[in-house]
Length: 137
Ligand SMILES: [Zn+2]
Image: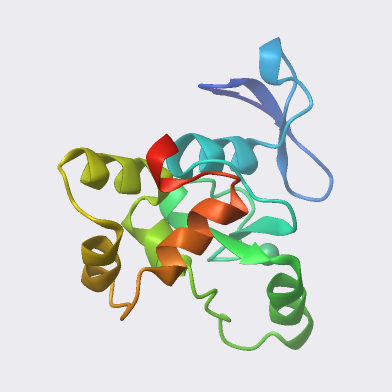
C-alpha cells in the first residue's frame, strides 16, 4: 500500500520496510532517511533499528543507531536492548544537538558531562564515526 511522505511516495515492501518510489530519494528506505534527517549521517557499519520492532513506525523517537554486531545480537537472542554507548547522544538529538550546543559556546567536555559521561571521548568518537570533527559542526 502506498503512502505519501516528506521524502516522496513510498510503498511497504514484503519485508515490512517502507521504500521511496518517486523523486530524488527513489529506492531509499524511509526509516533511514528519517534518521539521517534528524540525527545526521549513518556511519559505516551501523544500522537503524526500530525500538518497538514495528517497521511501520518510522517516527524518529522509535529509531536508534546500533552497530551491526549489536543489532544482530539483539535480533538473534531477543534479549534486552544492547545499549550502544553513544546512544545517549542520539537520544539528545545527534549532530543537530551537538552543533546547536557548540554554537551556544559550550565545550565538548561540558556537553559530554551533561549526557552523563566523565570524559569527552564519546562525543569525539560519535563525530569520528561520521568523519566529522568538532570544528566542522
Ligand atoms: Zn532491528
